[in-house]
Amino acid sequence: MKKLLALVLAVAMMIIPMTALADSNFIEPTYYADYTEDVEYVTPAEETTDYVVICRALNVRATASTKLDPIDIIHRGDVVKVVEFDGNWAKIALEDGTNAYVYAKYIDKVEA
Image 1 (cartoon, one colour):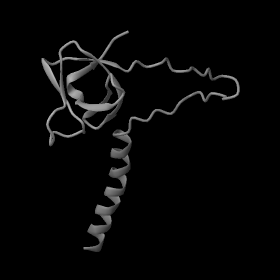
Image 2: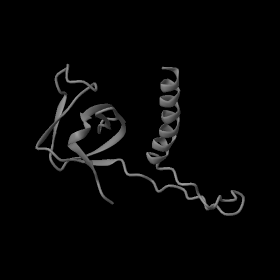
Image 3: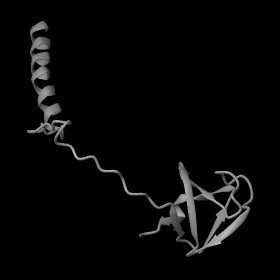
């Protein structure tokens, strides 16, 4: 019995590393940049915060929840300024300077 267990463990020790290597997507780089010379630092372009409503009517809410009634409704084609995303919700800036929330699935980034 001990010999059988030892054989099973030996085979398992050979198979496990091979399957781990087969599932790996890691490719060893052939060149490592010298960070004092070879790297060009690029500043990211200013991202737009403009999003357009893509559904017929979208509820604007005071909180990122459907528990309270909507405070306003915006329509397809309206453009909103997104302050940040909070899970499935987008925090938007209203014209009066306050913030509100819309469901992020129903807005799409305006292409420049």
